[in-house]
Length: 258
Image 1 (tube, rainbow, N blue to C red):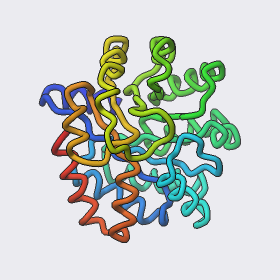
Image 2: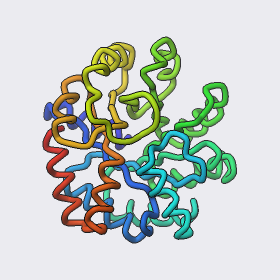
Image 3: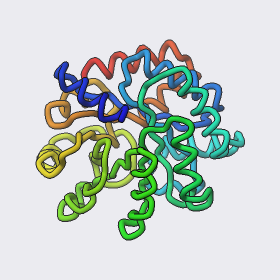
Image 4: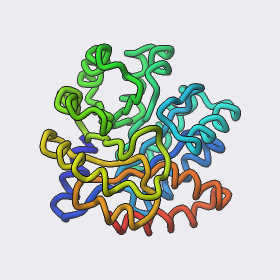
């Protein structure tokens, strides 16, 4: 219930959730752990950890490259789970895995969900989960008390209600067509779409895919309950050679607009 509690506490303060994304294992898992703490200190309310996959169709070039670096460094699901367990022992911040369905299938559906529960994961996002195959996974997640966070794209307005049904935590709105990554000017087209999602959803709505600066956060914060930043965080880590002080300061700058 950490995710639900976080959104409810923020609502009381009239604040929006700032959700930060990291690729687990880029450049290594010890660094990932230190980045999680830097994000939290900078003001991140929820942290997503991406489990690298060899064919990441929903990821833009920045996150794809981060995933490749992590895989080349030898990251595995088991190693990520162990690191997550260690992180959870040091922080109460809600943690979410973004994981491709194939990764879960190879690991074993129930085994994966059970391990997520054991290490303290609060929710999962599965960008490539076929709608027709999601019931088994949703049932397992519900049994273990883990939120299933749906991804909603602007092209799927007719399916929004259907896709949201049975989900919990928050709705992850893709803020522009195509893959993840920064966009130079996207908010004009997306606001009517975000409003329609808000009308249909009884859980919080967060927007991601393309947010990289304070201005983006300010443009969108009145329309949603949270903003998600991924590629821009990975780029900042690259630009600063993994400097956690610089990362914390960047998150502070972005999250103060949330």
